[in-house]
Image 1 (cartoon, rainbow, N blue to C red):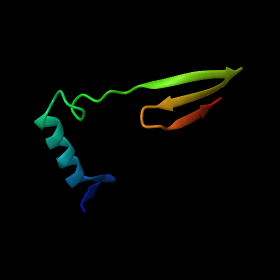
Image 2 (cartoon, one colour):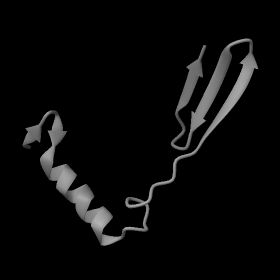
Image 3 (cartoon, rainbow, N blue to C red):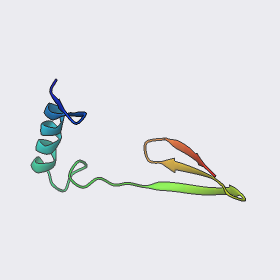
Image 4 (tube, rainbow, N blue to C red):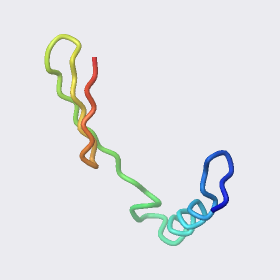
Length: 57
């Protein structure tokens, strides 16, 4: 595996090929979505599309 600045060059090439192969697909045109819930005061909980839960103050 060859890395440049911590980036896997082969994986980068594969990702680029996926984007170029279908510019309007999931890789070429990703959709990002989150939900933020105000708990009280300054406390929040954010839910990302991939199931991540992020607590905030």
